[in-house]
Structure formats: structure tokens, C-alpha cells
Length: 91
Figure 1 (cartoon, rainbow, N blue to C red):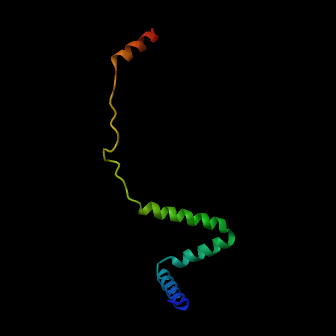
Figure 2 (tube, helix red, strand yellow):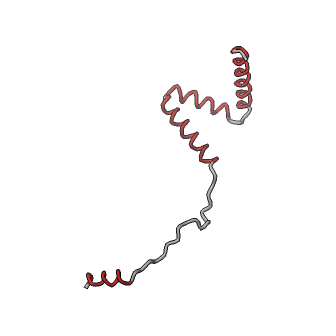
Figure 3 (tube, rainbow, N blue to C red):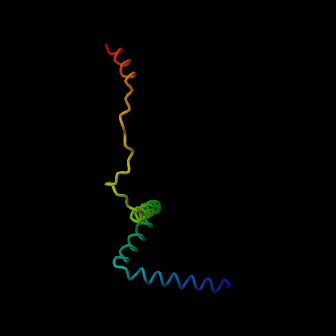
């Protein structure tokens, strides 16, 4: 595969992705927001991108039930000799 064919395939994929993205409701508002935000403050845009990626990762992560009994059960381990010696110091 030569470089011209590869470039043409990449252009086709970018045009197809752009076409599909423009069909999503609200995409034009998002594009205008990104363009105006980037012109005013590119660092803010980078931080927002990181937050969006974190949010998407959070949404796609598996959920864990809080009702499962997956905790360590504690028990009282009392030695009678230890308690008796502690009581001598209290008196």
C-alpha cells in the first residue's frame, strides 16, 4: 500500500466520521462551544477534555453493588490475661 492510497483512505474515514458526527443532535452547539473556548483559553479546553474523558471512563466502568457482603468480618479476640493486667493500671 503506497502513501497516496493510505492518505485517501484516511481522508475518507475523516469525512465519514465528520458526516456521522454532524447528524448527532446538538453537535453544532458543541463544535461552536469548543471553537470559542479554544480561542479564548486553550489550557481550559485541555482541562475540559481531560474531564470529559474521565467522565466517559467513569460511565463505562463496571458498577459494584453495595449490598454484597464482601467485607472482612471482625471478631472479638479477647485474652483474659491481657484484660486482667490492664485493670491493675486503672486502680
